[in-house]
Image (cartoon, rainbow, N blue to C red; front, side):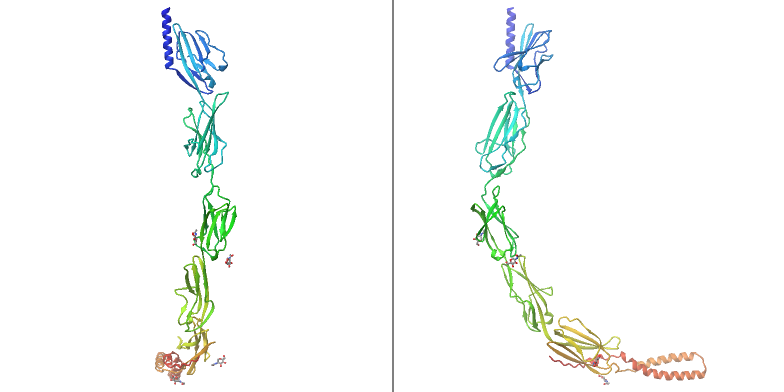
Length: 563
Ligand SMILES: *[C@@H]1O[C@H](CO)[C@@H](O)[C@H](O)[C@H]1NC(C)=O
Ligand SMILES: *[C@@H]1O[C@H](CO)[C@@H](O)[C@H](O)[C@H]1NC(C)=O
Ligand SMILES: *[C@@H]1O[C@H](CO)[C@@H](O)[C@H](O)[C@H]1NC(C)=O
Ligand SMILES: *[C@@H]1O[C@H](CO)[C@@H](O)[C@H](O)[C@H]1NC(C)=O
């Protein structure tokens, strides 16, 4: 008996040893079922199995007892009311796990010769709720510690940890730029913990558009829980202004010029001071000022500044380009033939200008300058002066006048030889009128171009005569004469006679070929011969038309001219 007791004591000691070194830990999820194993649960020759617990204050309590051959008896306990059961393998089942179930549980197995005790530590975990940010600021002032928001995660065990992130990088508390205040509150009923973390932050300009978020770490989570990123309007005072000219590169007279004042603060000021030609003007709810229809008088320095601080200012120099033309040839300018003439034009411009000339809309390669005017120099002249988009135009009409002269007086026979065509070519301005000393037909006049006009008439001279062409305008007149011989003069008989004989021979042949009465033949032949002689005289008279004579006549011109 003593020996048995000794051996039992030694076994108990051994089991206590194993208990000390191999305390099993079970992790249960809050609200779920916890199964606490009894490692000797397969023992078949037991007298009694008992589950009991030990609280952290070392107090103990029984949960369930089962004697061999009897049903399990559950000990009434307020904490475990209706939540306890025993599995056939003697594992203890606890449903709807609570934080108060975190205890050490002991499975005691009494056998014929031994008593075993197996201890299991139960831990309950609960994952935290996704974090939320409350009391979120909308804007932060640069350099000033501002409460950005309060992040919280609820009902965790053990308590969750909160980290603040800026652009995904964790922020570290330094109490100056970043101040993070954390707080864990435990629910009295459930014992679950909520974690709160307040972020105060002093922004710098580099934080514009920075994304802040709050992340939760917990032992139950493989990945952190993170809030959606939040951004803040970062406000900072204006340190600099910039004055811009919103216009084309070159400002010219007549343009509208808009001055724009840009401040680097956020939000930008709503009003600015513009210093225009020594006058200070306040512009409200706008950052620009427009000068309309500028002139050269607007050339100068312009400034803009903050309304409440003239020292924060910027200025620009504006140069307004201008282009004037003066002393310009214009209107109708009347000059005499062979005079000299030069168009005048004085350009007064703020820069290098370009001048182009045209006459009757055709570009000229040189300005209108003439040593000796010709009629063809008459026309509408235009000068175009341009510079930097500015354009000035001037035009005048040049009229070259002169008394008429006759350049040429000619005659020739018409193609069919029936008429003489006379041409009188005159030059003068205004347009000369042309008069002939005889009445002709088919009088035509060429277009009047470059002071020249040609007048043509057709005549049938019946006698040798001298024809005069007289040209005149307001400035004078000129006249020229031309000898014209009759068309019925020079006659050549030979050719006509030959043709007549040929006709006679044919006629004779015809007569011979027909045998008629000799008398009739004699009579007809006599009559025919008589007719032939008369016909040849008449024909010669007609044939005159084809003869040439104009060359001979033109060698003998006589010209009279008076101014
Ligand atoms: C612009 O100003 C000029 C004088 O500086 C004036 O002659 C002209 O009519 C003005 N134009 C407009 C559109 O106001
Ligand atoms: C504008 O011109 C004046 C005189 O030439 C000069 O003193 C000033 O510095 C210029 N201002 C700017 C902004 O260029
Ligand atoms: C030309 O004809 C007009 C009548 O048509 C006549 O009066 C004039 O005398 C004629 N002149 C000459 C030169 O034949
Ligand atoms: C006309 O002039 C031609 C030559 O000029 C001359 O041969 C002819 O005799 C003249 N006729 C008359 C009728 O004067």
